Length: 386
Length: 239
Image (cartoon, rainbow over all chains, first blue to last red; front, side):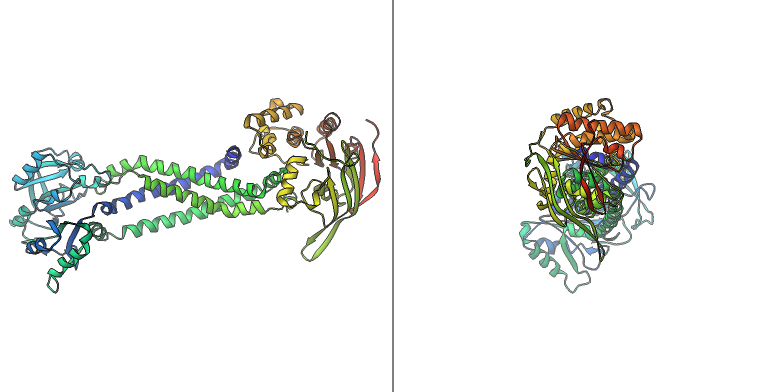
């Protein structure tokens, strides 16, 4: 600790350069915070999917499956409950802002324990209302929807049997979620699959995917194989997978989010390594005579090494923490600006630990060469300017 | 004050000292056959033309470099046999350094510059501050404690450097052209200060200079030429 003021003073020896470097580190870790939140959203199913599987077409998740599979799936040993859903792809007034909307089975909300919080009276109202819809609280706030209000969605994919694209719904429930990682569900719009099936001109008796709850998560593999065997060699072969894997496939329609996030971060941190590495090398090169003076006074080689490394780590940690704090402050604004397309969760302890680990690692990497140079310098040569 | 063993009042004993630098394939002898005794409490001036080996000899005495041959005993310690870490510890405990260009750390205040060698001791932060303040007072710069080196004149910077050199209470001060970058008045102030440290505080001082007026402040003067001592140490006129 007694060397802290020395390290701090050395760090601010060139104020402008340090400020610009800090800003670069801040920007890199701001991006890290944001992208880690994106990654968390797409991995959210991970901890929640135990005991739940999704059955979709083996060909593509855009390929529908017959409703006739329902009874067969229900009879597979190990299956506890089965529900289903279909992507609707409608929009309200304008194609943007986008929000997810699905036609779902009547038991759909009950399949996801602790995910959808809906008062019992509204649950009953949904069950009793043929054209009823339940919407997430964030979505209701965004469009100022209230209970009982009639809301038209314009079909992007499924026209009505009468040729029109306007589908009318009555808002009968507004749900919330207690899990902060699942805040994105509060942007959903759910309505009855039966209403959809009867009213659309595009397909009949077909569903997008089945949701299967298991008696015992340990039997997931066996149950998945048994379900897929039901439609083997048919024109609607299935692929049964965990909820997380299904969400990942869904996201891969846009691209491999993990790969994209990882690629961006790798590029950002590589650039940061070069930039701060160069800054540290320059900072130490300028200070060679000062380091020689310190060694003359009796500072040990190891102490000089540690001081330069500490300066480098302090620089990165300072900028990095500021960046992640800024990311924390900006996430709500990003959510608001995204108009419901995505809801990023606040940065959790896992992100902070990963971020701090990266900061220390980058700090040590960029400080290593200058620190070694400082440690190995020959006092007489350095004082003579050689 | 640091306690140091001396033999018959001799602090520094140099025998058959040689130093040869290797530059590529070339071997350049800088010092050869140097024998020298410096008494404890002496103010010793090393004079000679450029390239005569004055600074090399000073570096060897200060433990900044190691000889190619011969021995250096300072306060009973074979300095030439000490390794890197032990030599650094020995310097921290026994030697104070004053350079021609002051070599203060520009980002630290005068107070923090003087405190720098005290970081290597076990003193508390409060004690370090107190001792640095006393040292600055002794060099007449108590009112400039918070000033950065760039805010001080050359003479003031050199006085801060001297405060840094004696704040740990070393036995020996080695000074490399301490007045080489100063005007006459500032040089006189610095030399008077060194004289006071020698006379009133008993510090042994070895000073390299090529300024005869600076050497006049010393109690003894020796001349180096082409790496060899020329003549015996000459006692200066009583000041």
